[in-house]
Amino acid sequence: MPTKNRRTNRTNTKSANTKISRAPGADLPGFDFSAAIESVCRDMIARLPEFSHIDFDRVAISIVQARRNVSHGIYASLTPLRFEGGSREKRTRGRRYLVQTVCDSQGEEYLYILSIYLPRFLNTSLEEKLSTLLHELWHIGPAFDGDLRRHPGRNYAHGNSQREYDALMDRFAQQWLAADPPHTLYEFLEREFTELAAEFGRIHGRHWPAPKLIPA
Image (tube, rainbow, N blue to C red; front, side, top):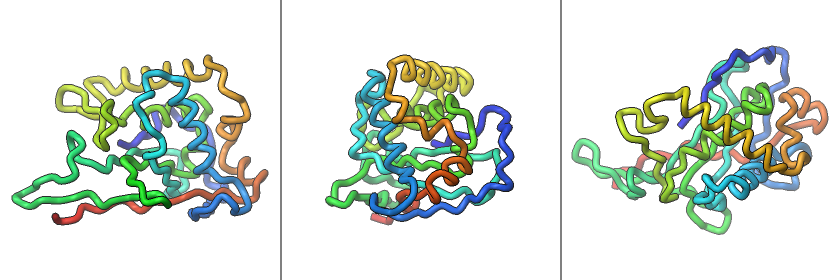
């Protein structure tokens, strides 16, 4: 599910150089944003017991270049690769559909795709970046079966109150910082896009196309 901005963004991004290399490979020059985000997420899962159900080996990270270089819009999103209850197929209007399979380099299937939208995501405060990551990780269902966490009621994604959901993510972010993770792990999140690009020359990361629904 997508995370949009919740606060006024004070950063002017119109003059930023927003070119992002969306290519796999840790040997590329520059800053590997996918690897850096993965390290932060793995540490969050290890330090916060509420997220211990997540096996990050089965979560793909996708770097998406925002179509418009503006402060408002989606910062991140989580795409489930299974239907409700972890089912591989769903019947809609009399037809059965499967979700396109997404695999790692060893052929192991991913269950979720965590997408980060640049430069927009980086042009927020450290606290909002952390809350955004936790917001998306919290959408991962407790059964870790490829389905989302489903809250009671019509708004199954966030529950009855978006404000309460956001406040919970802010508390999780503060709990993680209080657990004293290495500063070098998340130091890059204290910078805006232009600052990171100026230091490393370019920012790159793996991009995964949005999975398609395939008729069964």
